[in-house]
Length: 536
Image (tube, rainbow, N blue to C red; front, top):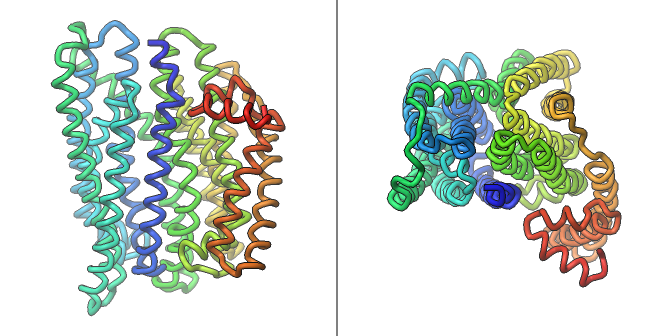
């Protein structure tokens, strides 16, 4: 059990790698989709997606985490027969809550989009996407089942399948719907509906894959989990008490995006901005700035998902030292990636936007430069939320997100209504929301676990080396661009050069020790390479 449980960083990295692949696929298919739909169409798409996301969180988004946590508890205890009962209760819970939310969004789409978000054009794409919630609810139980057993591979493969199908259908359907309904009053809304059709079909494909894997697994492990088990009532209550705090936490944590869209639509509409103009600005904010900054955060999300079952098992075995070590390594590994990503994204904001979206506007580049630090804060807040859930402090996670959301609403209102900062206010609000959550989570973890994260090698040295890396990236890009006059080739040279500078800098400053490097994914190979090169 110990050895299996200690590979959480490797399993988390498998899930993180899949998460990065999924986000990159999402990034690459959003590029042609953005060009097909335009900023207005992407604005409708993202507004519908924010509403769908809240419905998903309220009904079933927390099921994979809750199921994985309960299964990890069952595996660490003496009642392994509870595993099947947790799975069955999860399916029932997901089918009911996912089905109810699907019906509510289909029939309430027009009112929600018009009255709350001041965006009638977002109703159609929301209706098309709503059935995805039911599919995701049941599929999430399958994913939680395997994650609770410390196996992230089925989830990882299913996510990639989901996104590949999602990408293909979204691009085709967006183009087809824009062309097919070109004579309608609002073709951009129909095009956005084509994009959301891809979300539904992709989820169906992933669900089919996981269903096949589950059947094969059940056949191969029939009767092996043991006979001792709790009553269904006890198991269902345990699952319910785990699901509800996670739902509350995730709802409040994820609500900031929907609050931003709603406040922006209502306040800017009151200032005379038409729906098309508002949707174009939201298209830049959600479809470019948030899309890009969310790519590195996938690592934190995946590491957090893999860490929860591992921490639960260590806590059940009263191994608090192991828990603290896991927290330390997960946060450090995450920051070693998130900090340079944020710096690189800020320094090369305009070239990245030009390459991906053909967007050379100063507004788009300024938004990405201003908000790049959100990568660090959202990564850290995501991981620390997972820690709180793993050590049974889910109520703290809810409270902290609620406090941050309240501050966020006040700040965004002031920046939009009183200071007239427009879309810049959304970016600043996005950064401060994650920052407040980080600080509050940090305090609670420290008090409960008597834990303090080492600061110098986790934050200060990676930030210093990233600053040098950023300067190198900026210089190399502009030097190559001066010679070749090609944005793509300049980035192709600047990014690997920046990665090399950062990698050498992290090793030479001893931000990562040999023992720590060895614990990280592919750490043994990296350690041997560093020693061959004389770096360590």
